[in-house]
Amino acid sequence: MRVIVDYDQCDANGLCSELAPKIFELGADDVLRVREERPRPELWPAAEEAARACPKLAITLTEHA
Ligand code: SF4
Image (cartoon, rainbow, N blue to C red; front, top):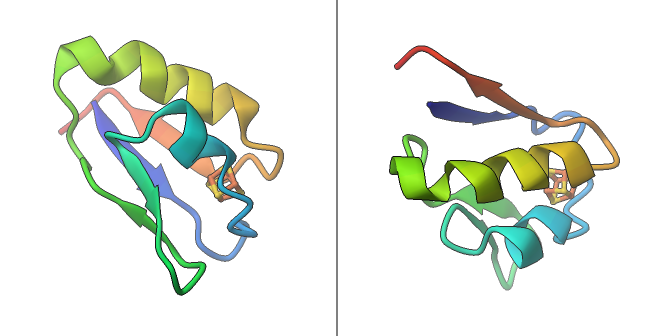
């Protein structure tokens, strides 16, 4: 799985980093970063939950590396 964030859509509300802190991190500068662009399989459920929860639909999860 690969995690892609559309930064044009993201408004840095931090929901994804609360739900999946090992994958997403909201910096002190209020800019979201992807910590794990290719997360381990055990993190996939958290990545999917974060993608579903994102109110801006800014998170895309792809099957391909
Ligand atoms: S939940 Fe969506 S809008 Fe919010 S910080 Fe994460 S990617 Fe950005």
